Length: 255
Image (cartoon, rainbow, N blue to C red; front, side, top):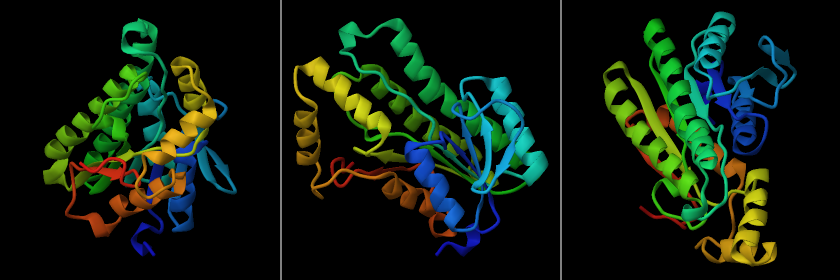
C-alpha cells in the first residue's frame, strides 16, 4: 500500500511492546528497514534479527541517543522516518504527585521526545535528506485527566515541541507531526486501569466500562489503529502536512 516506504530506514523507539511494537510491525510489512529501540533490549551494539534490527536505548540519555542514531546511520544509512513511541505514565492526583513522579514523566515523555527528534533531525540535515518525524503524544496533549497531572503536562509539552520543530525544519523538508492516541489497549493501559481504580475507589471493570462509554465509535483502540496513522504521516500521502497533532481516539477527542 505504501510502496515508497520500502527500503527506507525507520527508527521506532519504545519498539518492544505496545504502540511501538504495533508501529514497527506495520512498517516492516511495508518493506521498510525497521530499527526497534527500547530499554527492554540487552545493552550492546545494534542487533540484526529475523524481525529486523533492535538496539537498547534510554531516550533520556543524550549520549546514548546520539550514539544509537550514529550507529544506525553508519550501518543502515540515514534515518528517514522516526516514530518516537517510548513513553511512561504515573497515576496520582495533582496535589499528591511527587517530584520524582513529575520528573519521570517529563524526562521520558518530553525530554525523550526532544532528544531523539533532535538527533534524527541533525542526521537528516547532515545527509541533506527530507524526512518525517512522528512523535506519539496523546489526547492528553489536548485535554486534562484526573489522576494524571504529570503525564498530561508531559504530553502537552510533546505537542508544543512538535509545532516548534515543524516550523524550524520545514524549509529542509523535514516534516514533524504528532499522533494523539486515545484509549489504546496496551500493557501500560492495563496498569493505568488498575492504579486508577485504586486511586478512585472503583473496580477495573468500572474503569473499562467508563472507557468504552466515552468513545463514540464504541470501542477502545489497538496499536494497529495508531500504526495506520503513523504509516500515513511517514508516507508521501501526507507530504503537505507538518506541525499537526492527529487524533486517533475513536471520536473521543475532536479538536
